[in-house]
Length: 136
Image (cartoon, one colour):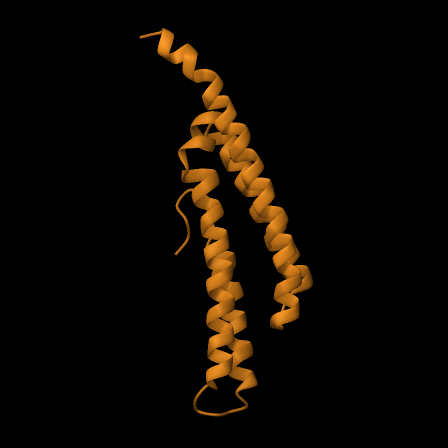
């Protein structure tokens, strides 16, 4: 289901469907997908979904970025992250343990991107706090 503010979910749905097709084709016409392929698919979808959702929540829905830097900045921060992660995933198409481990390094960079902006926004909120307290 797409996120109402970012639209994220459409690309993920297509990507997950493609990975499901890969698992079905790898089953080689068997009426049931082997357990190891189901586990690999579940793990892959869970990691991608959890990672992206965590960053949507932090950048868009988390109060520090949205209130500290504003909704427009929060949207840009998330969109920049999502655009490049989707583009890199489409370009490199990580598969298997090694591919996902390498892609995990890119995730770490993206985590730093959103985390850095979170720290900046918290600093902005902290600097505004005395001014807001004096207005009461």
